Length: 257
Ligand SMILES: C[S@@+](CC[C@H](N)C(=O)[O-])C[C@H]1O[C@@H](n2cnc3c(N)ncnc32)[C@H](O)[C@@H]1O
Image (cartoon, rainbow, N blue to C red):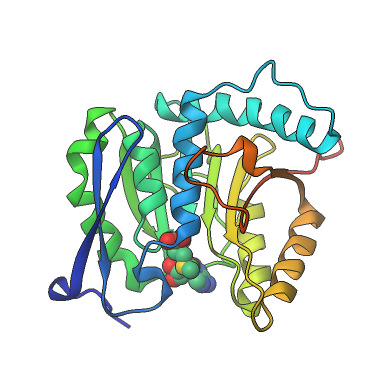
């Protein structure tokens, strides 16, 4: 179904931590992806925060917090390399493309993906933020990607033969209906190398079957990935919330072949 209608768009302006302004268009009509969700804001601000703040040297008695700090140090290196254009970023279920656009505005080479009906909206948002993206030599491409599809090596426009899988995968508010959970995890697995880090941000919802879905998703993810929760205290100091969770996933070590 085609959902892009230029007359039904309205802009949302957000400010990056360095003062630059991004203008992302949302649509009055369309499915859930046509607006920027809170989890997307929290994830984008976490990405920005990682670019600026070092957690090296932070010590925590709580083993879970210590593991999170260790994971963050690695993530920070990945984000800096992405921002220098050395590694590439893939966003799944991007909707308006907001999170990927922020990463591109920080200098990353990004591919934002979603169902076909969101391609024009994402493209419109890239075009609307070209100057901000180019200020840091970032790049943002659009690709239709339906979860469940395996991602063959080098499918994404931002990948190179040196780096045939994305180094970072971003996922905001993508846990919300049962049929999608296994296909989504399948795509995450196929798009990951042993070095890929996935940042998943979701709003904890307590209505209907949402708690069950979230549990199911994490059970499925844990079969393939090590999961580290990032406590709120290690997230952006302003744009974080106790009911919006950030986790980092990394493929389990493979036995040497
Ligand atoms: C709640 S929205 C979140 C959008 C955006 N990440 C944000 O947080 O603002 C979920 C997104 O997942 C996308 N999505 C749902 N099922 C999908 C599928 N099977 N394949 C690809 N994308 C899908 C939707 O189109 C939608 O854009």
